[in-house]
Image 1 (cartoon, rainbow, N blue to C red):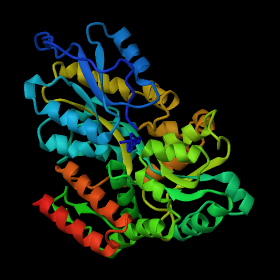
Image 2 (image 1 turned 180 degrees about the vertical axis):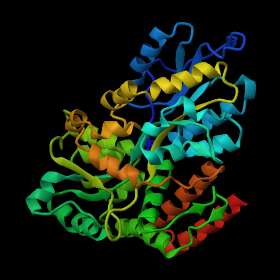
Image 3 (image 1 turned 45 degrees about the vertical axis):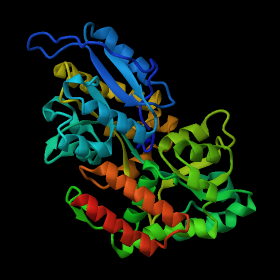
Length: 422
């Protein structure tokens, strides 16, 4: 998950841990009835290195309630697997607060692994509206949004300006530029995250949503993917590989590989999370100062991004639930959310930060990102999301590698999702 995952990785971008993986012995006992004491915060790895200093601020001002970070792999799939293994341990669980991909909230809540939260303890009214829905399940708040994300189309501004072209707003324009303009400049046309992992689920869902389709409904109990819109969306990706304006190398890309290809000057267009814009603009990037960002295109105009990011949840077996809730309130406060952006280059959930002139000067993509987040849609919601995602990845990758037509792929995906939903 890059948030990115979302932000991250991927999709989500997840949080960086500076202290490394820690082994824990016997848990400390909380004081009688106060719910306060030390915690562990489990999160996936990231590359920005900002979270450690934020938690040092908490630890300095909250003696006796220190937070120890546990870094899990930066792969969303591996992080999910390790969190689930720990949470299934019940009272033996080592994790108190979990930084989870937005799409795991339903699964973890339905399984009873995370506890419902008192919404009045958190500043939900200050958040971008779509992000709050990712933290609820069955009408109750089970997590608090921490980082949001939406996919953007990064493009070589210098190349399009030389050609006298505006950035693409539709798939037709994107395909034409990627097929004709890119080769004239020695570039690959378009790439996303097309390795069969969580990133491909995100890219596939965005293609389906942008064409007006859906994948699941009713919290995963109804399969809706067998539609003309889904065939159009998957067909867009399949056509790109078949016609060559999506390089075959992109079938091996995750977030980092695709970002590197773009900032090395090998692509005209890239779908990625905003952190890739920051990386491509940094010193050492071959395209620094020559890139732009717009919302993802769709068939007839702006498309629909998948809503990425992460939520903070409290384990059902957390040692000190009151401290856990206050830590989450701290991490979602305005000063800390500002640092999430300025130190971590991760999109905050606080709405007012997207309209701050000083921040917009430093992060020019913020207005575009706000527009994309407000129009974004969540990934298919299901208590069995891990199985849903695996099915989407496998089927869409088979189609993109030429083993199935888009029509056959959509029919197969409908059958597999129907078996999961039963």
